[in-house]
Length: 292
Image 1: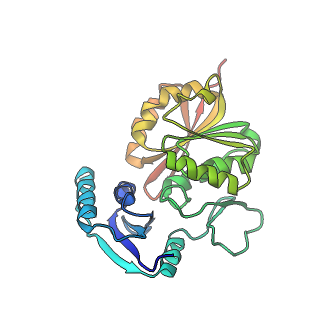
Image 2: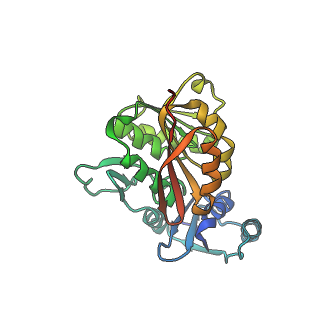
Image 3: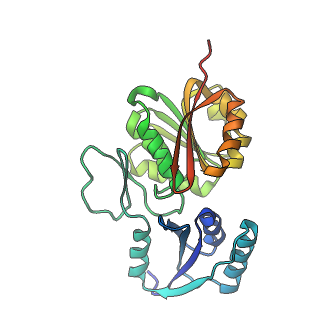
């Protein structure tokens, strides 16, 4: 391992953390963020084997700040030892318990709590380790569903695959996990394999619902943890793939965006069953009207 490793740190508004993480991702080997639960800010941290070009990073951060309508954060780049790089990356995502789910990283050497569903999700990506409010909201929603209620499931915008794995482990049902980001697809496939769920979870790439594997199918659970705008845009497609009486879990939206997402899905015959809010992020649990 190289003796020259670098850490890039930004302190940003919590609601903009994902955007800033994406802005610096191209300049780093790994990126993560952690929220300050008692505040409204988040710490975005990137690690790189090569010294990032500060001018290029500052420009990317400035463009993102302007697009998000927030002040440009200070870019802090420092050199650290390889050992510290590993330790700091692990610290971003310590083991987490959400309901019956227990999420841990590759270097966890402790004991898994009794009566918990274990999921090994390395801290390789910022979004999808369970620490983000929207992912936690989805896990809380899954935790609250009846045990025998899921037979077939679709995870639209699967990211790391954490939710697809959670569904497969709890209900032992088949799950299609889809994402348009090929990097996310590769990570999800590895996580599915590492968790021993390749027989149940199929990970595919491509945008939206236009995939051959979905043609003619109906799912009694669809979960989609993405962003408000694409959720609204895909509401009609979603309604064509959810079975009558099926459950839909939507996340990746702020509490202020609930109304627009709910209106789009109500027009497709879905009714709100539960609303979950974690750190300003909203998760909506809906049900498709059963056909008479």
